[in-house]
Length: 240
Image (cartoon, rainbow, N blue to C red; front, side):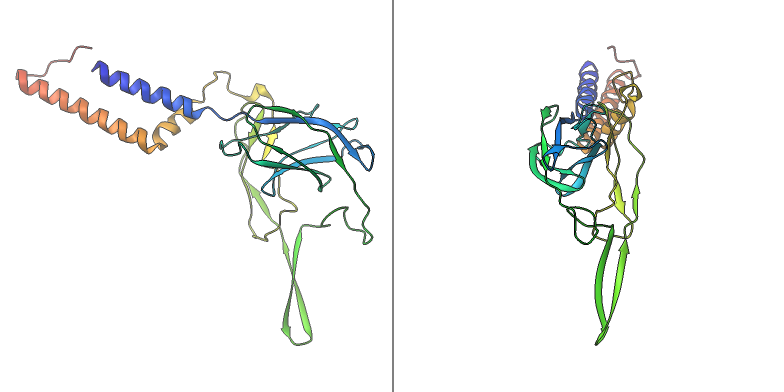
């Protein structure tokens, strides 16, 4: 029985280790637009595989100081990924590699030219995907797809980051208005116990390997009880 208890403790401790979330990667530095410090409120954003993962604004020509600028890794899949940086949705051409728990100083520089057609600088001026279809020769119709993003609730605050998942209900294929899926949060919101028991339970139940181990332990315990009862002719508690 002692061996059974030891196996259970090993399984639980392994689940706790698996439940520990990956650490975010922090970035900070100066922002220069057209050769001058960026004005307050200039947007700085980061994308991985073209998808926005974090955003902040500048103050005194800097970003990432107040508030702190983090890129989270809630599913532990971003290590080694290339991060692209944008200023007011214009690519800086600067990239960095995601490293869990790292803090990186990265000064951003970008040249933004005013568009001649009155649209937004450096990119698309709206969130609508437009397609032109010819139905009758000589007559064309324009179909506009309006993005409609829906997001899940924010996750619990862990290591100063809360996350969520978002998807476009209209499936326009554009991401001009895609909400950010990670956001810095107050450390006071995190569970002071240091261990997320709900996540621990979910890790034990949702892991097929753990489930198999638990079944083996239960079957073994039942067999030992029946064997001891058959050998002695009566049930006796098995001493620990």
